[in-house]
Length: 251
Length: 288
Image 1: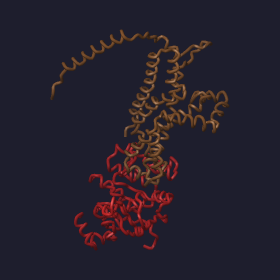
Image 2 (image 1 turned 90 degrees about the vertical axis):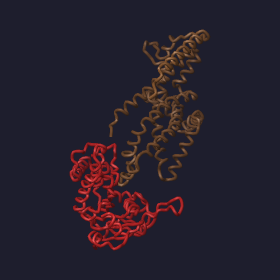
Image 3 (image 1 turned 30 degrees about the horizontal axis):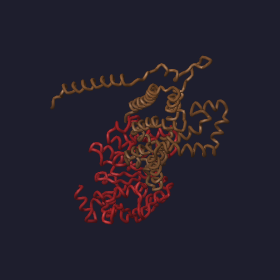
Image 4 (image 1 turned 45 degrees about the horizontal axis):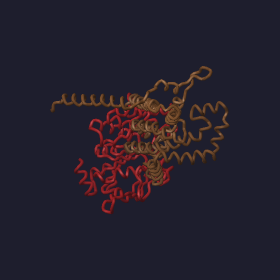
C-alpha cells in the first residue's frame, strides 16, 4: 500500500513498574507497526503477551514509556488536547462492556455525540436509531443495561462507539465475557463492520473471526510482535516456533 | 435448635418494670420540681398588638436552625464533592490539596474553628469586603429577602461565619464519603468515558457523580443530620438559632426542664423528617 498509514506506531515501549527490578513487567517491547485505512488487524498471542496493553496505549488509556504513536496525523503525547482529538476518532469496545448503568440505551449512545460532537437532539436520535438497527437491537432503546443480555449489552457498547463516527475501532477481547450464542451475535456485528470497510484493531481469542474477517495478523509474545503477516499466510504457514506452538494449542 | 426460654424473658421484664416503678417513686418523693408546661406555647407563637399571630423565640430559632443547616449542608456538599474528587486524582498536587483540607478540617474541634472563623471572617474579612455595609444599605425588599433566606441584615456577617464554619467542618466528612463513593465505581466507567473523548468535567457530571450520589445517599443523609445537630455550637457566637434561644429563655424563665425537653423535641422533629424524606427518595429512585 502506498497511502499514508492511519495508525503509525514506532519503537513503542511500556513497562509496568514493580517494587523492585525483578518485579517489573515488560508489557510492550520495541513495537513498530503501521496500520492502513480499511485494514482489520487481529492481534493474537498467549495471555500476558501485551496485546491489551498495546491496544490501550493507542487511545491513551495507558501511558507509554518511549516511542511514538501517530493516529490520523495527530501525535499521541502529553498534550491533553491531542489525546481528546485522538479519542474522538478512535472508538473502543471493552471486554466488560462498561455501559453506563444509570442511563438508558438511548442515553448511553447519544451522550458523547451530544456532548463531544455537539450534535443536535434530533441528529442524536437519528444516529441512535440507525445504529441500534445496525447492531440488531431496535426494541430496547429505553431499557437500562441491566435489563439486557450480555450480547445485547456488548452490541449497545459497539453502537455507542460507532455513534462518534470514529475512523478506527479498537476491540479489547470484546467476546471473552460472553457465552457461545452471544459470541456469535457480537462477532456478526463485527464482521459486518469489517465488510463496511471500518479500520479495526481486534484483540481476540476467536481464530474463526481472525480467519474470516481479518486482513492482517499480529502475533505477540512477551511484549514483542513475533509475526506480522497476512491472515492466509499466517494460518497456512507460520514462520516462528512460538506462533506454531500457539496455533497448535488454539486450533 | 435451642428452645427459646420465655420464662427468663418474662422474669427480666418484670424486674425492669419493678425497678422502673421504684425509681419513679424515689424521684417523685426526692425531686421537688413544679412543672409548668403551660408557659411553653407562648414561646412558640405570640399575638402582637394588632392581633396578628407572630412567631416567637422558639419558632424564630427553629427557622434559623433550618436556614443555617440547609445552606451549610449545601455548601458542604459542594466543597466535599470538589475535595473528594481532588483526593482521588492521580496528580500529586490535587491529592495533597484534598488531603490537607480534609485532615485540617477534620482534626480541629468545631468550637475552635468557629472562633477562628468568627474573629477572622466575621470581624476582618467581612468588614474588608464591605458585606456588613452592603447588607445595611439594601432596599427594604432586599432586606426582607435577605432575612427570609439567611438572617437579619445587621447579623449577616455572623451568620456567614457560622455558615462557613459548619460548611468547612462538615465538608471534610462529605469529602471522605464522596471519596469512598468514587472508589466504589468500577474503573471501566472512567475508561469508557475517556475512550469516548468525553471531557473531564462532563465525565464527572454525567457519568461518575450520578452513580456516586445514588450510592452515598444514606451516608449523606447521616451527614446532613449531623450538620443540624452540630449547628447548635454556633450559639456561642450569638447566632439566634434554637439552642441560643433555649439558653435565653432558660435564663429569663428558669423553666430548665420544660425548655430543654421542648428544644430536644424540635431538633428531633427536624432530623426525623429529613431521614424520612431520604428513605422516601431512595425508594422512589429508578432501579437499574
